[in-house]
Image (cartoon, rainbow, N blue to C red; front, side):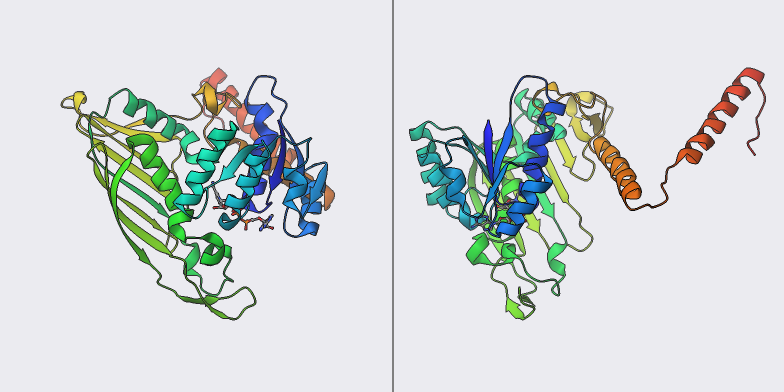
Length: 368
Ligand SMILES: NC(=O)c1ccc[n+]([C@@H]2O[C@H](COP(=O)([O-])OP(=O)(O)OC[C@H]3O[C@@H](n4cnc5c(N)ncnc54)[C@H](O)[C@@H]3O)[C@@H](O)[C@H]2O)c1
């Protein structure tokens, strides 16, 4: 697969990280490479190309879409761009990997979905939360009928980022570019999870909220947002379940708080993204033993979660290695004192040796 990445903000980077890490996580002989990167600002494209070892860069997406060497277009641009770009890419016969939301209206999205079928090209949405290990386990439990008929659900995705009105507004607060506010941004994830786990929606009641209409614009001026900062939804599903979806960027104290509960006749599940190694499961079959069981999910799914760095590794384990290495590189290059250094290693050795000594002698060992 030879990929061109369009847009290199937070998601362009995230996708690049994912692509470059695939060989570490998965066996197999896939040859996946990023050939080119495009951003609106050519200097940023150039920087990304140098920093992440991407052979070419451009500020014109057509250079990538119509490049014969590239077979896959990875769309990481603001929402308003997705439709035109995806359409061109599909018509050019390219595979497409597109960030959510697919487009800014259902008509556009349906057109793209139909076109992809008609042209027989391979396209994927980025609904990355489906690939979280507890969500994969949740899907298994639902499919195995362990919850029975689903009666109710709630999904909440809460951030606090829009509480700061002094911070300059970005495109996600400008409906002309994002097409929709937090409902598009976080709601797309929450709705997808309910759809994925419980099936199609039957009806929705929605209510949007803009609590801080006057913000700071891109040039520091007073500016009025038109994109929802919070959104509340009551929904019924075709399976008969009722539930709520609440998404917000004005929740004081929130971090990346995605929580999900699904309640069925025979069991329930609960998930919290801030505690991502676990899925909580309650079954009425447990008789007198009431209470949720915390199922460890960690890395115990070989496909498609991968077996690197090992089945027992919790989410985030690799992050510690990256931080440790970065600290080493930073300290060496900038001539800083390194911690943890070898004296830290020696101290740990002292404690270990003392413990062995205690084991051997059957006596308490004091460490000076
Ligand atoms: N799946 C997720 O977890 C997740 C998280 C955040 C954002 N997103 C989605 O990813 C997309 C990008 O969001 P982001 O947070 O990375 O945005 P961002 O603002 O960080 O980056 C946007 C990038 O697109 C570039 N760009 C803007 N207009 C362009 C154009 N016309 N042609 C080429 N490049 C252009 C910008 O230069 C920038 O590099 C959005 O659709 C967003 O909804 C998904």
